[in-house]
Image 1 (cartoon, one colour):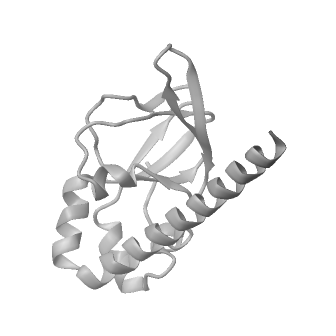
Image 2: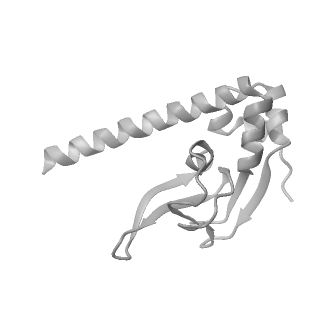
Length: 154
C-alpha cells in the first residue's frame, strides 16, 4: 500500500501552486491505484471516474479510429495528469483509451470529490484550474507549431 504524503503531492505539476495546508486537503481526497504493464486504465465509452495523476510509470492515451485502427494521441509519464476533461466538462463516458505502458501508480481524485473541493475550497481549486489552463494552453501552442511545420513541409 502506498502512503500519500504532502511531499509526493508537491511533485505533481497540477499542484505546483498549492501550499502545504492545501495539499493536506487534497491528500484526504486522493486514492492510489496501481496498474500492471499492458492493463487498461479506462476505455472509450466507459463511465468516467475522475482525474488521474501519474505518480510513477508511463501511460498511452489513444483513440480508436472509425475503421478500427488505434491512433496514439499522447504518451504521459510521471507528474502528468489526464482525465481532466471528464471533470471539467462533466462528461459521463471517456472519449479515449488509456493503457499502462509499464507498471504505473496513479493518484485519482473522483469526480464527486473534485466537485466537493470546488465548493468547499474555491481559492485552492482556482489555483488548480489555472494550472490546468496553463497546461492546456501549452498543448494547444505545441499542436499549432506541429501543424504549421507539417503544412510547410507538405
